[in-house]
Length: 199
Image (cartoon, rainbow, N blue to C red; front, side, top):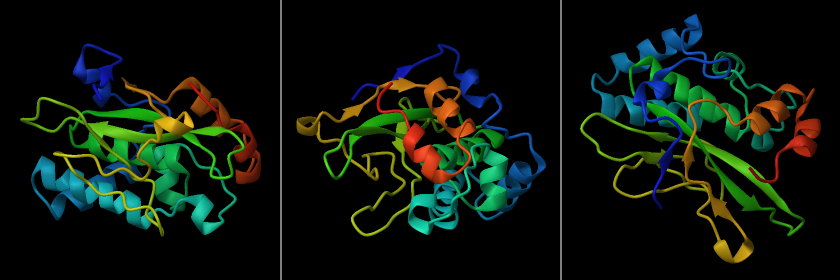
């Protein structure tokens, strides 16, 4: 799949915004601690991915009712759904000068009741000529997402026969429908009712 940049200027994918608040002290502190264990962009990106994937439980898995959406809040509460975890990973990577985009998939509900939009990121590492999508959702039985540049190993490979879609757009900021659902939901049950079904 060919990914489509929303902005021609790659610097847009380094910018801070309300959700990807990489100027926040907690994001900066976390990025510095992770960088200290690596020292180059590739190994840092992998460690940051694994940190968000493994140490911030997806709230559907943990049962946490809180709704976090700012990267700094995700890191502070160690809680969030796919969108929030993507914001946290994007913030950690942008904090160290790695262009990171937000991207989305439309996935079928397991019970066949409809569809839901899933969030992930794409990174552009130094020396690479293409974006590589990464999914920090968090692994569980049946989900085995891993950091990779040569091939995708996402949480949910799309099933076109079920109407699932890989949206090709690379967003510099969260899609407005995603941000609206996160900001207007008091708890996770309400968020589940507000999740967008398509973009």
